[in-house]
Image (cartoon, rainbow, N blue to C red; front, side, top):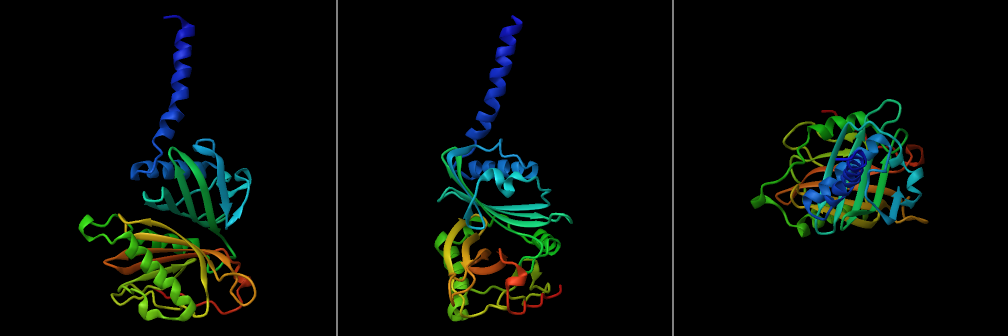
Length: 283
């Protein structure tokens, strides 16, 4: 076979590689996981060229639209831990990313929406040094010890149950009706890096839930397989007398209809918070 023909075949094969990878991205669990894997690789390199991005891509950081080329996803980060929700009903993913680097620590909450075989939306909420209760080392320690794996099919809660549990918890911030929250025991909460558990059977997430704060602008990503639901929201509605409106995520693991883990990230500078932060529990 002529050299030119061989070269042509080689080039054609090379061109097919990204196309085949992109074809794996879809609204199935496997396809959503492929999208997550591509994102993790891109975030690790700070290079989005390997992502199958839609032409009309929406990209946000901390609920503000920006140019992806200027975004955090274009900055190489050494990822120490990542855990994802796969929502086949809405073609969305959520990935909690922990970067425990002394120079540039981060905890990210990254949402993506898939449109057929393309990534149509990427939304990142990030926290770092100086933000609300931030401690990437603690976050990594406790998240790594928790079980966010699949729940047996015959014990899985419905999407409605998972969303109801999240809403009940968030609703309690406004009117203080904590008796409507499906508290589980034990339940551990990690807030920015502050941890409430003590490793005991009666550990509770019913700690430090203030009243009078409207957790507004809620959007959900739900994974029934892992009993997980995350709410993108704002801590307060913003504006006079209605809270800071700081971008926030609340991530929940629900087992048998009860809260098991709660993770919260708030894009709010610690110096901007007027009250005294809650003291973290020791394990």
